Image 1: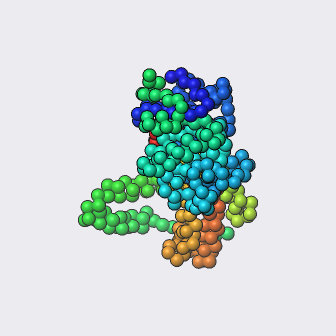
Image 2: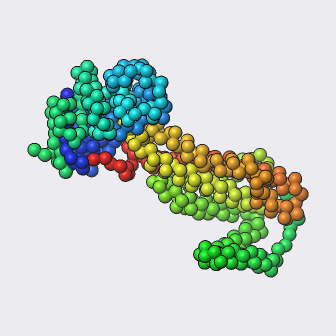
Amino acid sequence: MDLTLEPGATALLGPSGAGKSTLLRLLNRLADPDSGAISLHGEDVRSLDPRALRRRACLVPQLPSPLPGTVAYNVRFGPSLVGRSVDPTRPLELAGLSSAYAEREASRLSVGEQQRVMLARALALEPEVLLLDEPTSALDEHTRAGVEATLAELALRTGVSMVVVTHDRGQANRLATRTVNLRDGRIDG
Amino acid sequence: MIGAASIHISIGEVAASLVLVAVAATVSLWRRVDLERDLGVAVLRSFLQLTAVGYVIQAIFDSDSLWLVVLLLAVMVGFGSITARSRAKGVPGALGPIVLALATAAVVTIGLVLALGIFHPRPRYLVPVGGMVIGNAMTAAAVSLNRLADEIRGSALRIEATLALGATSWEASRDLVTRSLRSGMITLVDSTKTTGIVFFPGTMVGMLLAGARPLDAVRLQLILLWSLLGSVALSSVLATGLGYRGFFTPAHQLRDLEDGGS
């Protein structure tokens, strides 16, 4: 597979088992490839500090799994690792949550709200690229439309690049300007 | 220090206690617990193992050589580590942390009780104390590492999500390591709380049987219990504090994730 991702929004589209999530995990080195290389702006990701890389290319996992604690704690956590203190209001607002959520216990929220918390804590790092792994697969139809709208607006407002893994062609069309089709670990058509 | 007169126990008296084993075997047969065979193995093994170690300890006491004590304790650390390793199967690369945990617990605990003048540096004291320290350290290491494996497997998604924010392996698993450490320490802390009420600890029982004054027996028991608290804490903190690394690569990736996603 040879693939170059441009700035903007790209969808990785394909059925289960096509290697979409794996590819996403290789991009921020949650996993390493058996062979081949991944580079960011021409630099092999293996030559970068994986922690710095993950702050630049931040992954939002398929299933929300916030840290025990408040929403604000979750949003502040990433920046606090590098000694930065952030106001959670803006990341929360970009993710479609009012600041009233800040002091609520993250694990008590609905799945859709938790997914937005996961998005907000990624945004708090001000990444260059958001890696979104099936961002709406755990959500019902109504909530899905809301999260999609938030993501579309986010791209417009912040200019952050996105790589969206999805098995839904409609979602790929709604969220991305380019679509890469994957099948059995290869680019298809 | 220990004022017990030595007592003699004949092999006949030991054999007589087999009557109680027969009671156990009868219960097993009667209620079809199917443990008769294991009972037999247990009786035979305990007889052979303890007799053998009795001769070894006797030889060490006769020689009065501290080098032999060190050798014996090193062998105990070795066997204890292998046992703990087999109980903590879910932890990748656990042997190194376990050996270090047990050895450190033994050296520090024994070193301190010697430095504080609680025991004389003689095989008569060092062998039984060392055995207790290493045995308890082994259990604590095994329990805490087992718990760590469960915690990390149960929180794999959360750990990866935290790593994805640029956290180190330690930052992503610190609270789980703490919980595991707690589980390694809690058993002894709890049994120390209830000691003397719910059960009489073995050392005290042994000293009373050997004819020591009750207060002497109690004081020695307290020294041992309190020393064991220290050694168990050291063993657990090292086993978990080093053992968690086995779950991660140097690039802060969670190894061997069952849930790879699609």
